[in-house]
Length: 249
Image (cartoon, rainbow, N blue to C red; front, side, top):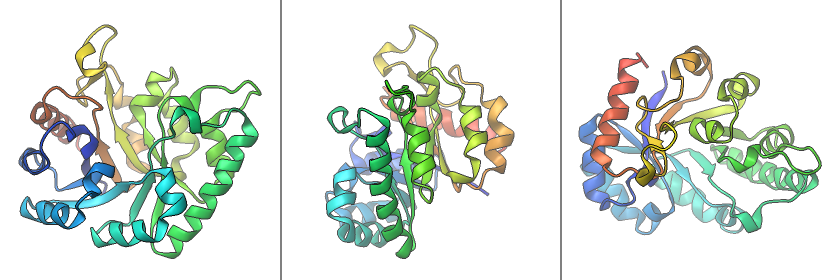
């Protein structure tokens, strides 16, 4: 049974305690946290408990993973999670060729080994740039998964669609590597510009029906709803929860 949770980056424009209340009332039992949530971890843990929520996954930046891993292992485990995700690479940090991405995969393999020895699952979270073909023909996401062979993948469906590709093909190819699905929906062209063209899950253009069977049979533990810039957190949280519950997940 996969756990339905919500990425707190979606709630960054709402005061944290209020946001957790909205999320809990919408029906969620857990969240995935990101860097701003870790500024005061004890207060964060208390707020989660107050609203009957748990943290099941954490986004930790590449620099923190590379230079401050023991601290982050203690912090994340102290908050109750054992799923850690590298969420993003700034443009200036992105390799320019296949060898550069393979070198990054080697670094991620080393991080994965350390996390696995401490009982963690480690995953990479994609955006669209990992699917842009390099000048030498390589595809960054494929290079990472094929070379960091023990690392898992937190697959963001919305960003794959934004990249112009079919997410189902990637789900089927790497199903056994996926530890979490980011369920993010795309608005019709020209709509919801004030929300960066994203939609509440189930209310956009993505064909979720076409992916149900493969998502269900994957070994992933988490279905994580996300919207990069919702104008109304309550609307987004409730609509997305209702859509997914209606699909029988």
